[in-house]
Every structure is written in C-alpha cells, then in structure tokens.
Length: 157
Image (cartoon, rainbow, N blue to C red):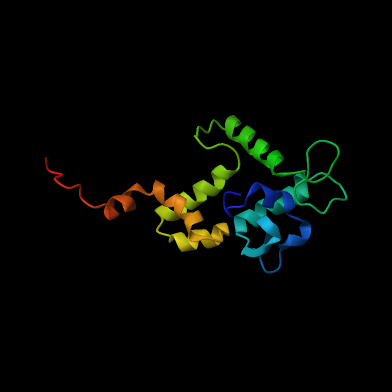
C-alpha cells in the first residue's frame, strides 16, 4: 500500500493470478471494475513472496491476503484492511490526523510531490481519473505554494 498507493479495496481484491513474477507486474483492480497493470518494485515483490511462503495460511482461496483467523478466506471488505492498518499504526506509535490505510496513499503522494513529481505523474500512479482529485495533494507542498502566491497588496505595512 505504501509503495504502490493501493486502496484498501484493491488490496482485498488481489489474487495470486494478479502477480506476474516473470515480468514484475501486478494487476490492480480499482474502483468501478477498472484494472491497471503496475510495475512490482523489487522490495515489494520480495516482501509478498516472503509472506506467501512463510506467513500466508494454507487454504484454497486464490486471494493473496488471507484472514489470520478461521475461516481462512480473503478479507470480506476494505474495512478489515483499514482496521488492520489502524491497529498497526497505533502499535508503531504513529501519530497522525489521518487514520487507516488511506494514510499510505496520502503519504506516497506527498513524498512524490516533495521529490518533484508532477500532479499528473502522481495522479497516474494513484489511478485518479480526474486531475482535480490529485490536486488535493498540492495543499501540503507549502514551499511550492509560496512561490505561486501573489504579494499581499500593501504588504510592507
């Protein structure tokens, strides 16, 4: 979620067939049944492979991520992922106004913006259909916003 900007629902929907290990791609099923293929970063692929080999419960489900308690099936909905993330953030002592899994998308967009990525590039990664959806992340780039601000009339007074 943190590296690919995945939504909780996209994590829930991931299946074993969505990962193409040979070419390093992951198929993401977004809102409204849209799909997108994304490069699978090496460290993300390694972490997923480690989970699949060592931590994923044995079961017949084709979902990548499986509940830790019976019944051993994929998560029912995005609320379960949001709750898991929220508990993990609390255990890690992360203090944030934002809660749950969306914090990862917001943090990724903010980091990309601070590293010079355009809003168009960020929107592409986050799979936004409209540029104004991505524009909400511009408000956190205070340095860039200051350079765009006009001087206040009579500002020297």
